[in-house]
Structure formats: C-alpha cells, structure tokens
Amino acid sequence: MITKQHGPVIFIDDDEEVRISGAQALELEGFEVIALDSAHAALEHISATWPGIIVSDVKMPTMSGMDLLDRITTIDQDLPVVLITGHGDISLAVEAIHAGAYDFIEKPADMERLIDTVHRALEKRALILENRMLRQRSGNLGNEIEGRIIGITPAMMTLRQTTLDLADTDVDVLILGETGTGKELVARCLHDFGSRRKSRFVALNCGALPESVIESELFGHEAGAFTGATKQRIGKIEYAEGGTLFLDEVESMPPAIQVRLLRVLQERKIERLGGNDSIAVDIRVIAATKESLLDLSTDGSFREDLYYRLHVASLSLPPLRDRPEDIPILFSLFVENASERFRRPLPELDDTMMRYLLAQSWAGNVRELRNVAERFVLGMPVSGAHDSTPQNQKEPEVLTDKVSAFERETIRAAMIRNSGRVGKTAEALGIPRKRLYLRMQKYGLDPDQFK
Image (cartoon, rainbow, N blue to C red; front, side):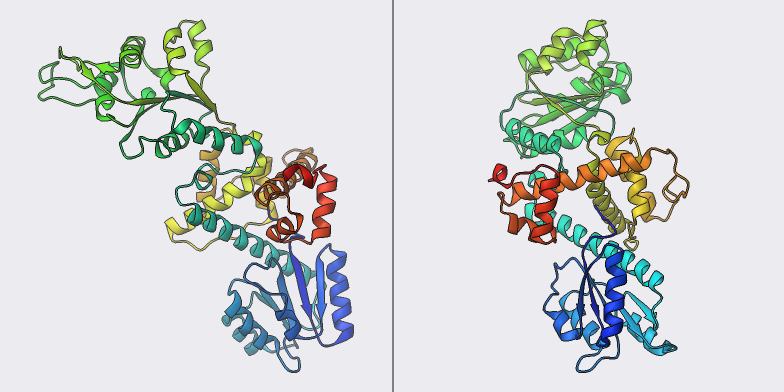
C-alpha cells in the first residue's frame, strides 16, 4: 500500500538555517527526516532497497548535489533525487533532469511545492520497490504457488495451502466462487502442482455451448453419427487422458449431459456418439461453479447424485471485496504486466487512485480489477478515480478501516515470513524497529505468536 508518509527523506544542505527549516517543514507534514550537512554522509544510508528519497542542495563543498546524483544512479538509478539550487539556473536544471533527477526546485524553495514533490517522489519509490518485490517473488518462486495465487490475506494463504494439499491427491474437486475470482487459475494450479502436470489440462465452459454441441465436445463422435459428422472426433474427456478435465460453469450443463457425466465419474469410461465401444479414461475432473449446486439440486435443476460425486473435495474462492488488503498488491502487479504487454511507460499510482480502488465493490472481482489496471496503463479514463467530490460521505471512515486492515495484514504476513523476528521484519518492511513495535501494539499482534 502506498501512503504519503511512506519512507524517510534525507534533506541535505550545508547551510544550517536552511537545513533546519526545511527539515522542520517536512516533519510537520509527518515525514521521517534525516537532516545532513554533506552529501558524503547521505551515501551511508543509501542502498538499492532503501525506501526513502533524497532532497539535496546542488552547490556544496567537497561533493555537490550533481556529484551525489551521479553516485546515487550507480547504486540505484530509480531512487528519486530532488535537487535545489539558486534562482535562474535553467541550464543546470535541464542537466539535472537529463542526469536522472526526479525534480528540480529553485531557491528559496517554496515549501508547498517541496512538500508536494516529496509526496509524489515517495509514492514513486514505494511503487518501484513494490514492483521489484513482485518481480523478485515471481522470479524466485518460478512455478511456486505464491507467484500465481497472489494475496496476503488469511483466506488466500489458506487457499494456497489447501490447493497444494489437494493437488497430489488426485480426487475430483469442486471450485466455488463468483465470476472473476480466478476459478480456472486455481484449477490450473491443482493440475500443475499435481502428479498429472506432464499431461494435458483440458478446459470446457459448459455455459458457452448449446446442448447439441456440448455432448459432442465432451464425448466425441464416430463418423456418420449425425448429419455433418464426416469423420471421427475425439472429445474433451478422451483428449484429457492422463491429465485434468476442467468443467467451468458446470451448473449450466444440460440434464441429459449430467446423466452421462455421472456415469463417466462413476465408471471412468465413455462411449463416443454413434459408437458402441466403451473406452476407459484416466482423468481427474475439476468442476467450477458460481452457483450453489446444493441449492440447484434441491430445486431439481442439477442432479443431486452428480453434485455429491463432484463434491469429493471443494475450494471456495473469496470475492475481492472481502480481501481489500490484496487490492494494492494485485493492482500494482496488473499495472506492471500491462505496461510490459502494451509497451507503455509504468504510470505512477497516487493516493487518489488507491482511495478509488479501495472504495469499489468489485462485482467483477479480480478480472474487473485487471481490466481497470489495463485502462489505467493505456491512459483511458478510470471512472471516479479522480473525482474531487466524494461519492459517499462515509468513504473516509470506510477507507481508514480498509487501510488499517491492510497495514495489519501486511505486518502479519511479514512476521510469518520472518518467523517472528522483529528486526528482520522491520528491515523487510523498510521501517524502524520502534515504529514496527508501535504498529504491532496498535493491532494487537504479539511477536511470540509468529515464532
């Protein structure tokens, strides 16, 4: 989550009066400020993982602000540096921007502009580090499930673990979740992390095909089985031999096909349309639904015996509105992916956008969030994201709750990853140990419970 006060600010000026007044102005805005009288001293704080930014005077003895900028770019070229110098030096300003400076402010620095620039620079730094973390996790984990089923909420942690537990059991699985929650993604994880991963994953959307077509798609047909069947066709069930058959929107399956599917699940045998031979099949069936099959079986629109045959094991996917802490992580990842795919520059995420994202109900869930991220990267309007008038007068209270929940779960997840070691966790989160202790006390988190 990107917040205005995220990360420290190093303020460098050899003029003591300027240094003190500038640092005080930033501290009054809630920033953590490290005031230094030389550029050399700043180098001791900086690394590629340091979460802060630099604000520096240009003309200083020993090492100038431009020299410091040059040194910083060799450490991390994405670390924002704001330079301050005397009035009217346009050529130096142009040179600084070309050299990689984030911004350039003339003396005497306008405090309102300086504060706004620091806000934006810290937002950019937080996004850069977050995207690096996501790239590193994806790269380090490879096909590990954490890089595919993404989220820091307890529900997502449980989902990942249960998926891994079921992956190698080879039982049929029923996945429940609203549209856009990622049912096919979880089905593919069940396949990819199981013993059938070297064989095919075959998907069929039962709601996208009419009854006359879905029967042939599932079971295949012999030549001459019906008008237009000029040659033999292998169906999805047979094609998935040795692998996994994924049936999405299984609640839409016609009653006659439900009967035939039940027999397949019971006997693991099929007959092609127009054929007499019984063909043994070795498949795992994963079905997905956005409806309650038990309710549908009660009103007679879905076979009860098929429901129980499919429901050997089940996974429930939480809607996005129930895990708001995951929204900033997912959106940042989608933005980065869209930026690479569309070959567009990575846009900056500001607080207005984050407030908008956290205030939405996300009826379309993760799929809708991905679509918004793509529009954002393409520069298309994101409805309501930059409205100055609140859509709901209760939004600030709701937003505060959501931000607090996100912060709590971020700390909790980091403590779990670091086995309750407070120092390591503070380092991973880029905050002082004392601040972490205060945050944990605020949210009732005991370090011992993570050890």
